Image (cartoon, rainbow, N blue to C red):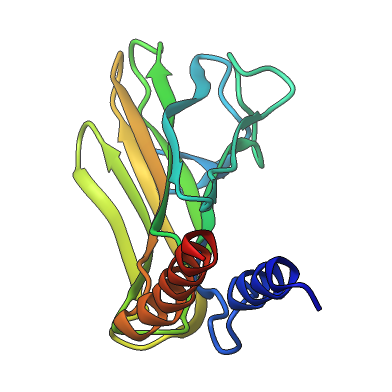
Length: 252
């Protein structure tokens, strides 16, 4: 075999993928839904009544912030849902309300160095207006919050993965009524967790009084991955050897 052909074959062989240099992967996923529902209308004494015509409830929901950033081949997504579950968003009835959903998912793999980040922040509002000049009313409500987190890493020395979900419910009259914050960090222990929370309450509205329920739901996550030193060595040595072989062949 001619010497030039033997040299070319040697260089090609040295550049073949190295066994054991598989890409390590960090994964994250966060999923949360927050559904705020009107459960009843009551008089001042707490007796259930039909919705008064002079008690008006209007709802709104919106995306507050969304961020998706990736580098080095990482993946990221931030799905969300914002809904007013009502026939008429300006006059909500019994059983109607708001639904917010926020999520984050993505991955990072090495080599090369990569990072992914996701953020979805949503908010909603129920504004309650008692237009009666003499009557006091009570509005019953319920907040249901199912959530799930999942994180994993292949190489703790070179990867990170974190996911978070959060919910905040406030009223003008009572301040913070309900708060939830759950976090999963793969460095503290990879795995998945899920649960559901339920909160119930009432707003009391005197004559000509008004109040509001403000709801915030967040899903965030991030992952990073860098090659381990041993992987960098496996990736670098063949390239250096191939360069040396190519130079030797050229010199001859």
